Image 1 (tube, rainbow, N blue to C red):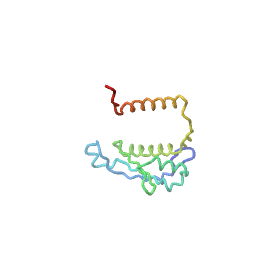
Image 2: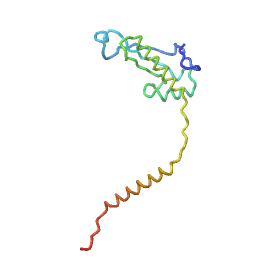
Image 3: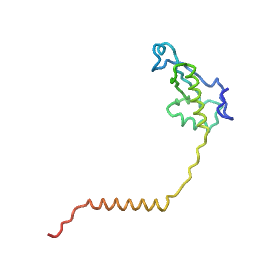
Image 4: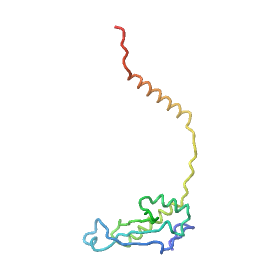
Length: 141
């Protein structure tokens, strides 16, 4: 069992790990050992997630979410499989924790009197500058 918050506990059987070869530094070892981890978590079918957290998690995941509702996290930062597994799991836990935070409702505010005056003054100055660009009227010679 993986404890995310006090109320959200994910069963380890819900998380699927695939090991793949990582690109980048590692010398000959990088061509022989599958150290990168691809963690898959089925957000759409997970019984551990409440509906509101699930919706926020799908939004937060962005491109990491498949059309079927599976969250995919690639971890290839480290040179060992164990460190990459821990990194992928920590990133999943952090993403779920962020999804549990309810966004604060937006409070409507009105512009201050000073900001209204500044806006109107800048509009007036801009209008004057544009007005000076017009045709030059012929003067009496």
